Image 1 (cartoon, rainbow, N blue to C red):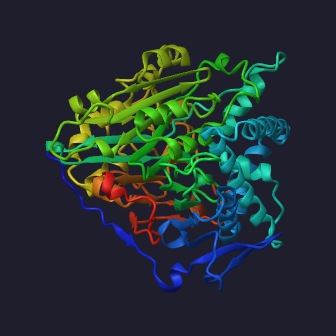
Image 2 (image 1 turned 90 degrees about the horizontal axis):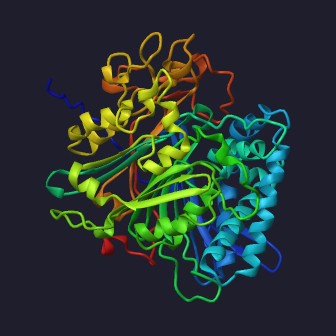
Image 3 (image 1 turned 180 degrees about the horizontal axis):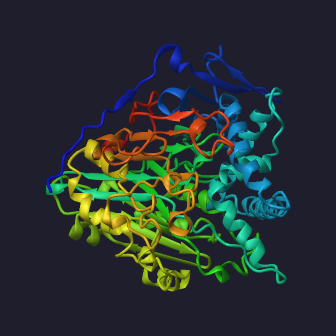
Length: 557
């Protein structure tokens, strides 16, 4: 059957004038001042803007830049302070929708989890204090300093409920909270380990275009719909590599899809000025015994490790080496890093172009898979481990014995077969977006499950679990979750750290699926403060307003 391409329209977002009003921060001896214009003496520590277009495009847009003339610790705190000032209302909404909702579902209201996280933060602070000349710990300290800035600014808004700084940290640990609880439960001798979140998270595709003319890089995020409060961000943070260093970090500039109050993408989707495109999909921990023995000391949370790697790495191999340190065993992903520096149009990809790593509690495996991308023309990722060792220890082999066993197979799971069948339909960015938003679960034979009826909204590149039968269970249980976006880039867009993005649950292949609307869904009781009611948005391409003078991405790519 011949493929029929339906064009997708893209909206270019460019702000100027009042829509991109820059705010600045400066400091006195005892306070931070936020200015609506450049300070009279011209001395600023951070500058940026926030445009809340969530109701019109599904996204807010935030850019923050810091001044290299100031100490990196001041830069970090001011960057966080300005972001916290500009987005404080949405930070509260995100906490209410996600962290508060998560904790209210637990009998101890997250008090034990919070103590565990704070104990880890104490250990982190000790390491940062004693190892200030180590680039890794210096950057970890700057991350927490930036987070402290967000917390301080948020709580300066007296019209909002007070949030503890640990609340802001928990927002940043969104995808790790369930695994942290698993660690706590696994180390209680009197209780069984709690169930890890076995839900699928994300689909990713790296596509080598015909004639090796380009490399397309894209991902969509699968998560609960309560999380759909989105901000596209760009940071220009010219931090020094370490306390006594005179060199600037390789990843001083990055763009990402993100959320209010988070310094991380969370999705994760990063474009970094070092030339690296970074993303992941999550693998479940079916072997709960792996969580036992992990304590609050000796670990750095997964999201923070990814940000430190973004800042310090110069290629894919070093990214994964940096990331692999201090494995927390939380949010256990297959991370993919494509190095656009190594891509030469029309030539075979050189060794080291695509590196991956896969994590489980206590184990990380990393490898160069450029040969796979060269041979197959694509690399796809869909929540099943590629590494035989990770597949074995994580418990996927045991899941193969269950009624829907093929869904846990690297080669037979529906998305493996869907990507294999459909990756060749990608001929431009419009068709790439169409594939990453595709879902025809009721009609596609590759989406079948051992269910009644024999299909699942998860059997697609972009899930819609809210469309499963009301009485479904297992693979076709009805849940308020699915693919809430898609983000795509290519070589030319990457030079400007740009990407196409679309917000909200997909309407599926050829728009056969209904638009998601909170007010008419069966999930209207789930917290969704500050969300649009209806998610029916076109893809957007954000043209960033702040352009770094520290990194010229186009020179290296």
